Image (tube, rainbow, N blue to C red):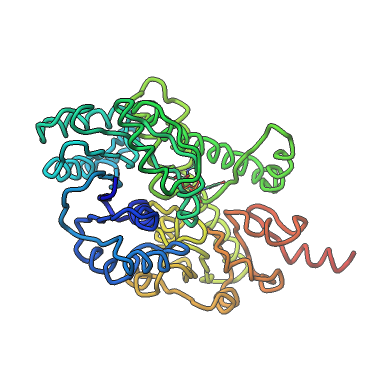
Amino acid sequence: MKKISVLGLGYIGLPTAILAAQSGYKVLGFDINQDKVEKINSGEPTILEPDVIRRLYQVLDNKNFSASVDLYPAECFLIAVPTPFEQAKTKKEDKKADLTYVFSAAEKVAKVLAHGNLVILESTVPVGTTAKVAKFLEEKSGLKLGLDFFVAHCPERVLPGKIFQELIVNDRVIGGMCQRSAELAREFYSKFVKGHLTLTDDKVAEMVKLVENSSRDVQIAFANQIGAMCQKIGIDPYRVIEFANKHPRVNILNPGCGVGGHCIAVDPWFLIQTFPQDSELLKTTRKINDNKPNQVIEDVLLKIDSLKEKGKSKPNLLVLGLTFKADVDDMRESPALKIALELKKKKSLLDLAICEPNVISDSLKDMGFTNIKGLFEGVAWADLVLILVKHKEFYSIKELDFKNKEIIDSCGLLYESYSSEFSSYLNFDLNKNLNEQAVR
Ligand code: SAJ
């Protein structure tokens, strides 16, 4: 196997294409977006990811990689396109996977598919989709699955922010439509994956991916409920969780401002759509995590009221972080963004500014935000600081910078930053703590 085509040059497709090219394959990256293709060909990565620029330059330079809006014959086609929700069906109990991108990629592959080719589906899909794609390819190409061409599902497992590292070291599950399909896919990945490659069938691999992300969603919902309970009795949930996790068989995740990104908040719905009778826990989980931004907004409005009672007629609110998680530039399904957009509407109650170091100022301005670049200047301006995302830059704020500020910390930055003595979940009373410290 020498010539590879990767369809979809997003967060997974682009790094995978680059790594495959670095390992010696001749890789063509296909994308429908002309602008993206041009940027990538000129060495401008379209994603923010450590090491992406150096690696992209290297494979462009040695001519092992190029991007195109046209698809050409290859020995292996890897499909890594998005699988969002169906647009018309975004009601709470009715979210279904939109497989349009998957099938339009498969249609393009079918046109150039030839004897001996391997097609790998990496996109996250509802159970049974790989088999449907394989059948579709048979119908469109006239070739026979398992004889003329081969199909496997190999879901990605990488964490944004660590994509290259995890693409190399993580174990992978490969689900073949037949034994040969799985073996060919293993041959493809073994050139650049150091982790273990486990072979199984298509349905097991599809289910593994959905179960992994759903399990994380359930765990985060549990953490968010611990957060709500602790808030009611005025204790710090991060401390409770840290101490509980000292038990050898307990490993609880952390409360946050909600669950975002394109994976954890989406994939449980792919199970719910296929198994509506057996997914009560997942439905409840989605409800809890989807409602978390509303709870944060309520907490902010309560604090604004109390600031008003203290004589601040229109308090200054500084929001720290808008992306869906720390140290990425990705705002897809971001609960922090949802919260900030909602609070921005409350113009009569508060003045809002944000500090988001990972997103370029122009796009924040286009969304109507006042972006304060200087973190310390922002904190000095604020009456209330709302911490939504634990970007590494925010750890540089010192306790004293927060003096006389109200703080709502929805992600545990303070607990990690300062001695746990000085943190409390939503009512971080630093001034009281500093006074107590002075007395001691
Ligand atoms: N979050 C919390 N509390 C936590 C951990 C996360 O509130 O303790 C929030 C984050 O802030 C974020 C959301 O959950 O809004 C999701 O972040 P994440 O870091 O849990 O996951 P993703 O979406 O970046 O990546 C996940 C990973 N899946 C698992 O860990 C099981 C990754 O390995 C997958 O490859 C990826 O989904 C994917 O593409 O499916």
